[in-house]
Image (cartoon, rainbow, N blue to C red; front, top):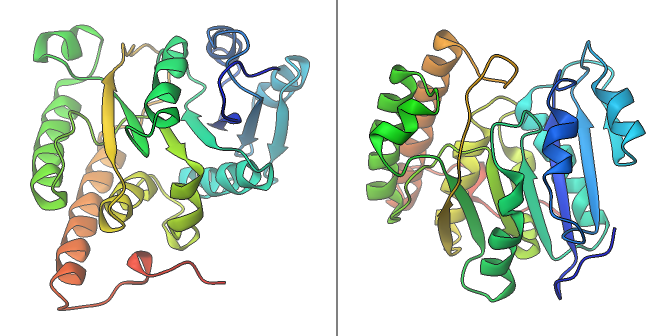
Length: 252
C-alpha cells in the first residue's frame, strides 16, 4: 500500500473471532491511506487468520488467548519496529467506521493532536439508536464525566475502539506495564494525560450488531470497576500520596 500523506501510517487490529467482519472493515479503509495493516490474532477459533492472510495483510497469532491488552501490546510493538509516524488502532469487528481514518491522521499530521479518539456519542438518541445497550451508555457517560474532570480533558468518549496515536505517544507511554485485560485502554489514556499529550476526538458512527464484538454485562461491570481503580491510582500518583509503575518512565 502507498500512503498519500506525508507520514508513514500503520493500522493495527487486535482481533478475536472476527471472520464475519474483518474483510468489511479492511475494505472500508480508503485507498492509499496507510502503509501497512497489521492484525494480531488472539488465538481465534474461527477463520480470522486465514481471511486476513488472503487479504494480504500482515498477521501475527498467539498460540493461546492472551487478552485484549496483551494483543494491543503486540500491535504497538510491531508497529514501532517499522519506524512509523502514526498508528491507527481499530477493532476489526466493523463496529467503527474505518472510512474516517484519513481524518484522524490529519489531526496528528498537522500537530493538532497527539491522540485522536473516535467518539461514538454525539447525542443520547444517536448512541442508543446505534444499538448501544442502555447500561453501557449510562456507564460510559458516568466514567467519561469523571475521567474528564480528573484528567483535565474534554472528550466525548473515553472508551472507544477507534484510536490514532503519534509514534511519540507509543514510544513514551510504558504500555507494556499495563493490564492484559480490557482495562488496558483506560490505563493508556490515564498515562497519556499524565505525560501531557494532546488528546482530541472526532465523531464516528458506531454500529452494534450480533457479529460485532462486545463484552457482556459482568465483564463490563468488571471493566468499569477497574477503570475507577485506574482513576484512583492516577489521583494518588499525581498528589504524591503513592507511586504506580504505569505512570513511570519506560524501562530500558
